[in-house]
Length: 317
Image (cartoon, rainbow, N blue to C red):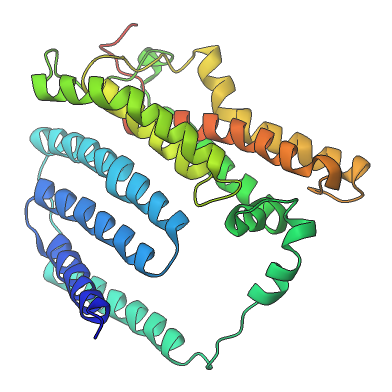
């Protein structure tokens, strides 16, 4: 008798328990740590659902980059509480929030439970067209994202660029153009430095491999870019690298490189392949890898800049 069903039930119960603790935790740091653990557990859930691409993204973003981003935001919120009144929501607002969350969860659960058996799906049609629309890509996820959902995939990268621009817009006028300084420890812990020195070369190789193998196996631009972003964040936390100035030309070019190259190739497809975001069949795979290479660059730059925050008045690098 297989033990996998029991492990799945145990994993599901653990996910629910960690999620409940994340909401119930009073201390900000405890809730952030719980959220990171929750993201890592979800990565295991996606593996059990045979979605390794999503699992890689969840582990890199949900369990890594987002955790650092929340910790940094928590420190800034703590600084704001030190200089202003600590205003907490009342009982009524808490109850309203809980009721709305329960209604949304119930609605989502009912939609899933009321689906017909088998549920409607375009997977057979997509699989049948993978050889032509997927441009010879062995990974169906990459084929769908780059062929069927090209416009959506490009817009997702534009959202990242806009998010970075929104963070930079919170800079004070007198500090505009300087480098952010979220990692304020002048002398980081020695274990942090050792960890960054060990992980940086290994993580960089893994990130590039995950991107390159995404054409034929689980992986891709976002997963590889997120891993490279996590490595850059770790090196900045160890003060082995400092955040760049936000007015650096190379930084801005790297941020927009992915969406810009994607859009140019999409417009070119109208003339060389007869449709917007279409690829000539003979060179479709190299074009897709070319686009994804620049998307990796933009993702690897955008996520650390979101964590780094706006320019700092005390930084003049």
